[in-house]
Amino acid sequence: MKAHHLFEHEAMKTVFSLRIIEASEPHARKAAFAAIELLDSIEQKLSRYIEGSDVWQINHLKSGEQIFISDSCYECLLLSTKASELTGGLFDVSLGHRIDHYKNAEAGPPPTESGRLHILPDRPAIHCEEAGRVIDLGGIGKGFALDQMQALLKDWNIGGALLSAGSSTQLAFGSQAWPINLGPDQQTEVIQLKNKALSASGTAIQGSHIVSPHEKKKPFQHPRIWVIHPSAALADAFSTAALLMQADALPALEAHAQVLTPNR
Image (tube, rainbow, N blue to C red; front, side, top):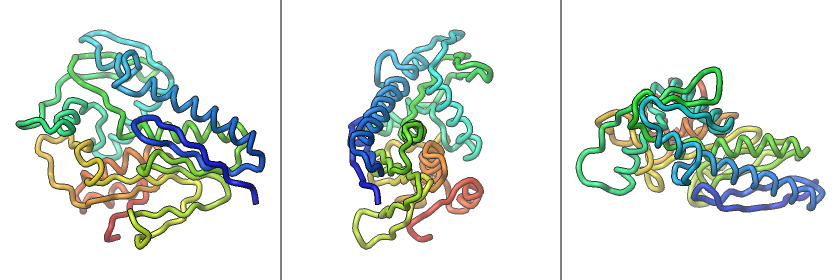
């Protein structure tokens, strides 16, 4: 059996871990460092808090302006649009003003979102039809980074690994199944994750970050939800949307992903 090598790195306000299965430690280390370098590059493009990033530039567009963006940001935005369509609009990366309102515990009702952005279908560019929208990729960015890191590690001929973005999203690939504990203690259910991603969303840790595009935010139906999908980006996005869904709406999401709740 090949050895496991653990590498960790802080990015996107969490700790990413790479558990790589590889006989050669030097090869595992070089592959991990390449993946970590890619992760940092992705964060530099997707974070709205880094001045000059693609998302920062999008959020500072004036009405009528247009900019070209990196392929990474463009692909992530296209996946965000797909996730929005598949969740009936519940997953929405353009609610930055409202996210800030809840994160900062500001008084009064959340701000009404305004503005309109258009993703060009034929080239990596964004057109601002009306200024006002604020993009925040926090609900999909970590999963997107894991997908890109997986592809890079495969290019390095790494046969298997478990990649984690903190405790929120994990991605396994290769012949080995990885035991994942679904709860904070050893008494909770353990699943075997293999060639798929698992993403968790819950009210205790990040409830204030998960906001609804609807004017009136309904109470969360579950304290925690897990979603399993081949794509870590979509698992990440779907778990965010699933937490906002009423119980009777979850079956529609299950046509696209496996959804786990505390009582299911």
